[in-house]
Length: 238
Length: 238
DNA sequence: CAGTTTAACTTGTATTTACAAGTGAATTAT
DNA sequence: ATAATTCACTTGTAAATACAAGTTAAACTG
Image 1 (cartoon, helix red, strand yellow):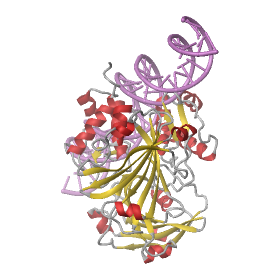
Image 2: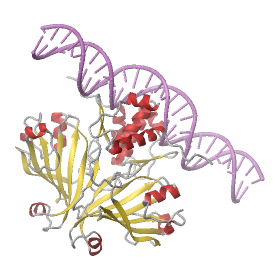
Image 3: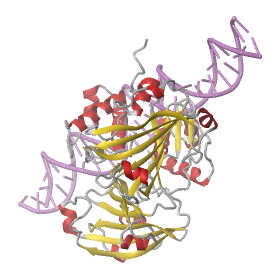
Image 4: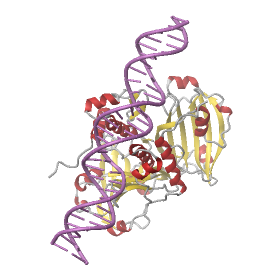
């Protein structure tokens, strides 16, 4: 029994600073301690500190200015699912509830699947589930998730209410999302999607099709997300 | 008379590799030369090479695998305006034409502007223009751009047909986009947007509101983009 | 006092060195 | 022959060091 996978130093600093920013230790517009100060504070060298700050900058949590410093740029409280990149979702779980619409089941892949599947994926079958996510009791996201049934024993019998699908995969199967690609469209609400998201027929709906890469070679996670952007918009940095 | 701003080595390597990938010297699925090989080839050290590869990975042009190498992942030919991050737009200018709807004019800022403006921006007035972008002669994007009129003399009298707004700003005013944030929504087409994009009234339309940061402090570029995603979707990596 | 220069900060770029950890193929042992 | 091990190669993490370049405020000069 080991102590688990070792976590790199720059990752730890990243987590600490991220938490500090999000908990308000530093707030919008503040200057972060300089790189040299962070070195002293956390006992690292500058390249390591810079790696942490670089990741934060990439997440949009700070903006670096040469000759000046790193300025905290806490994201406004909009919906930020566009970047799964960090360790947790950008949206704090504030009032976000999840309701399972279709419990995980194993089905054959749809014939007209939105992404190209590998041979292995196709013959392994597909774990399918549908969820509805509500923000302040208003349905915002309707997610359909697909994963190839590769080395994920007993996953259909797990409880998904509390933990996110990402959490289950990470904790029980050591699967982590490393990145991915997505397509975004505006489509009219169908009878089904409109019904679930409280929209009239043919009202506009945001549709994301995402393919997520994991640390397990050949294992991808797909989701088709319908999003009611009437009240909240999708927020992202680039 | 100087030779212009010096360009860092890692940036040069990034440009070279990017061009090679996009021109097909390396193609989808290929392994890039290893980091050590690139060091030898281009006479740099590994951290420098890694910085270039890191940027490429960030752009989604390669995927790095520990113990294996960097795999070329050329983006499918979808519309990739979501990441302006690189030096050029991700979408090759293949059949992309721009039509000016409203030539650049100086106006006061709209009262209900989509982003919060600084004091300086508000009192400087606003350079406004509208453009329509056509892909294969089909109108896809309807852009409304706003910039604060700060240190941009004679910009309203320049020709915008050939060069992009980004190009003009870069070449004549040394303004470069460094990043930004955006909100995405699905909205129904209005009479105006529908007319420009050949959509029936109330058909779904993608609406992006973007604020772009530049290398000039206090100077931001705003745009409101309406996008007909009927035929093409917006593509992006995360 | 106004304007300029300097100095002390900041982040950016780059080298050199070292070892850890993942991958895959060749080698070895069974 | 097959399974396990080793080995060579890949990227990942980390240190110590140096100088370039942008920013700001203090010091200096006219």
